[in-house]
Length: 270
Image (tube, rainbow, N blue to C red; front, side):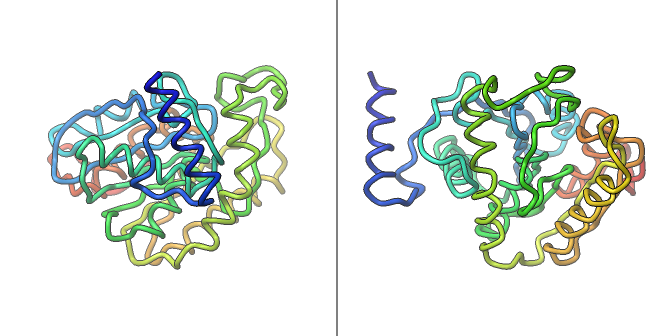
């Protein structure tokens, strides 16, 4: 009953105002927090993925240095159902409300993979005072438009996935990805937040040279949107860089979090 009342209140807010204010968001998310430190590394997963996509790298990022926060977005396993649009503004508002509820204050190092990277671009461009660093892991571009890749390393690997058979939350995020990108494009210009863009160099089986070149160009465009961004093309890595080359992701996140230790690499080469 309590959950139903919360959802009713949120739906009323959305339909009456058309806006999503931080104080009005009352969705609860499943989270995993590891480590401690003055900065918090926020781990945002891509389309169809839960926080488990970060399970191997999260403790390594946190080790003896920083607090890390991974979570399942609304609609995913264990979190409250999603209501309203699944665009950048809504998802970032829900995330910021959850952080406030948990008393996890800025500064944040934002880490976003794939579609999650698009959401983190919105966060960084609209709330730069809360952001100490931005790490984009083969991020979606604002004008990319998402397509289902049956060969991707997702729960749909190895079979043809069409929106009809997707869980509702994936269909909704996919449908709203165009609006999410437009919101990023319409956001204030990025300020000089320390930014690292990691991009894959290996596409799915059957990818044409033209498609690979287009993907590389979009990653260049993302890096160009953030002043002074470092763009690293990760050799021998597919879309899931955190799985193929986890050390690169760990090193980049720890650098942005201000971690300096004897075992931390000085560069991001893999």
